[in-house]
Length: 198
Image (cartoon, rainbow, N blue to C red):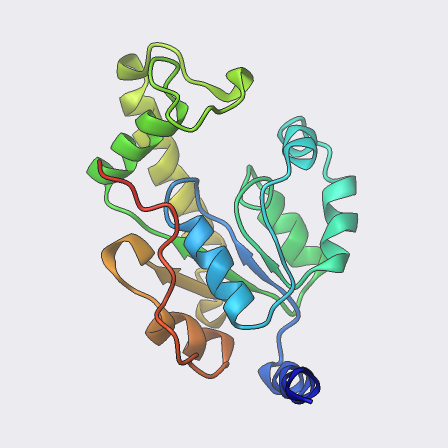
């Protein structure tokens, strides 16, 4: 009976919220896993990293990703925040919301190095995604991050209600996410997944 009551509650919330899907559209290592866990706590159907879809999207093939997106309500990580896929998702699902996760440059670059540097590869990332000679790529990576954020902010410049900018790594959580999604704040602490010492 508890499960059935929760199911009816979720259905009622879906009718009230007036949005179809929510996409994280920033960059890796900005709290995307924490956001994904938060989506699950809110009762949303969530999808995240997909290597096959990522590889296709990076090559400019969006067809399978757009079709796959039909099956979920909330999205985080690659391929969903890669290249200009967010523009295609916005066209296909016009009643959607988008989230840009910020993080300070210093801790972000240290986290990127830990996960993607060929010299460290802390998380056993597939070799084809590793960055060789990482120290030589720092400036280019920071420029990529800044350009990404600027592009997303510019795209939604005239639609402030459709883009949430939040900083999970700095401690922001339910107090920003739930009003944006028009959903009640859960009675649990906001998740902080894969927090590592950097």
